[in-house]
Image 1 (cartoon, rainbow, N blue to C red):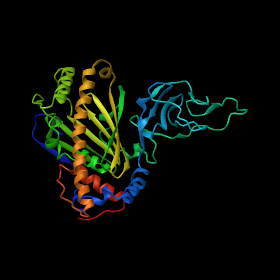
Image 2 (cartoon, rainbow, N blue to C red):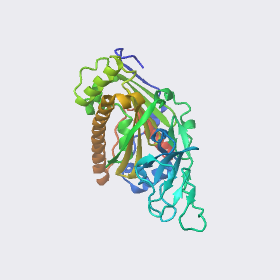
Image 3 (cartoon, rainbow, N blue to C red):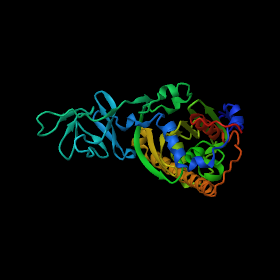
Length: 377
C-alpha cells in the first residue's frame, strides 16, 4: 500500500483463474424463494454465526439483549465469562430482560422464577422442588473479542488473515448498535461492499476522503479485505459530514494523516469488520426473505475518544450514515433493475472489472462453490 501522496497503486492477490471460471450470478438467485432457502441452509446455517462482541458486556453482571433475535437471546457476563443465553423463561415463555444493564440474577417479572447468570434455575416460588429448567445456553467461539455461535471456528478461518492487528479492540469500548431493515437481497449489499467501482460515482463525501486510485485487495478462502488509501489533502471536501469528521480527526492527531482512509474486511457469508480513523465497526447481515435483509451495525471507539472526544464519535457516525444511505440507494437500484428482469423472465450479466470489482468476483466464486454451482464463463 503506497503512502499518501505517492503514485497510484492498485494491488490485488486475486487468483487469476477466478476471472476465467466465475460468472456473475443469475438473476433468479436474487428472487427465487427455493434458492433462498438453499442459501440459508448451505451458507448461513453452516456459517460462523456471529452474535456480538464481548465489549457489549464488559463487566461482571452486565447483560445485553440482542434485538435482532426478537429479544430472544442475550449476552451476559458471569464469573465463568461471556455466555449466550435464551431470554425466554422456561415456565410460561415470557421475556426475561429488556435492553441492557447489570444484574446479580435473572428474574422473570411474571412469576419470579430466578436464574443465575449461567442460566441455572435457582428458584421457582411455591414449587415443592425446583424444576430442572435451566435456560438454554449456546457455546461461543472468540476471535478478537468477536463472539460466534456457529459450527465454524473463526480463529481457524482467519488464521491466515494478515490484518488482525488493525482490528485489535484492546482499549476500545462499545458505543451502540443500530438495526437497519433493508428492502433488497442480501447479496446486493455485499456486492456494493465488495467493489470499489462505484465509490467515485456514488459517494461524493467518501471519495474526497479515501484515495480511490490507491488501494489493495487481499483474499483468503472465507475472507477478503480492501485497504483504501487516504487523500493527502483532505481539505477539498464537498460533504459537511465528512468535513467535520476530517477536522475532528486531524485536530485530535495534531494534523497527522491517518494510516489508511479505511479498511473494509469480510468473513463470509455476512460479517463485515471495518476500520476507520478512531473507530471500528462490525456490520452483520441477516437475510429474512429474498427481498428483505436486516443489517446490524455496531460502533466501537477507543475509550479516551468515546469519553472525551465526542466530536469524533458524532462526526464519524454522521459520515458513516451518509455513506450507508448512499449504498442503500445503490442496492435498491440494483434490486429494482434485477426485479424488472426477473418479472419479465429475462437474465443479464455484464463483465467484471478487475481490479475494481475483485471483491465481488471472489464473492461470486465463493457462493458458487458453497452452493455446488461453479460455472465456467
